[in-house]
Image 1 (spheres, helix red, strand yellow):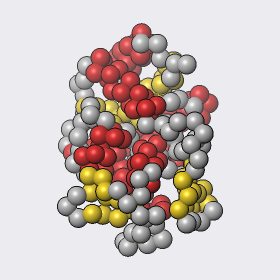
Image 2: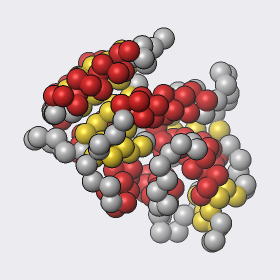
Image 3: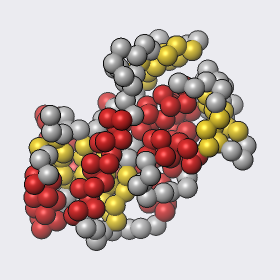
Image 4: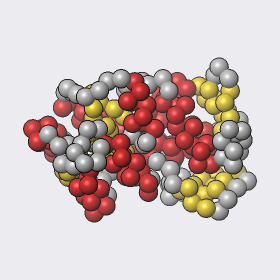
Length: 228
């Protein structure tokens, strides 16, 4: 079944161009021209992915991204006219999966969309994989749900992918490069801090004391490991 993509862009020519290219590739496409409309369309149509402009009238893309991710949310590709790394890190820290800087080639945008959706499918566990259970933490890969001390913890798509990758191999040390490759893919426009940002977000949601983590530990000079 073709994926549904919501395009959120206030510049009509850019919006029309993106929609046309996505439809030509067989995607179901919905459009919104501001943040408020985007949230309404997303609630009704539950898109698999959102292409989200950072600079929107009324409610900017960062706030839209945060609201979309409150219930787990779709994969998000952000569009921005600013190329500074700090902008990318901020966007990724609120749940965006990738970043594309204007001006961009429509073909490159379609390739990014396909790559993110392909990675999400390839990274999904096989059917009937049992939940991972570690003390007070339960990770259910089929439902993509996490419970900590019996309470549901809402994670973004990338946060869940990162947690599952680490927890599936307890004690194994992953370098940042390995995690980038496994979760974001070879074609991800690398931002050095993206793994660190997502680990920090996971710790805030899962650790009893994020300053003294016991679930996800830093291996100095190398990367991270899950200790359960």
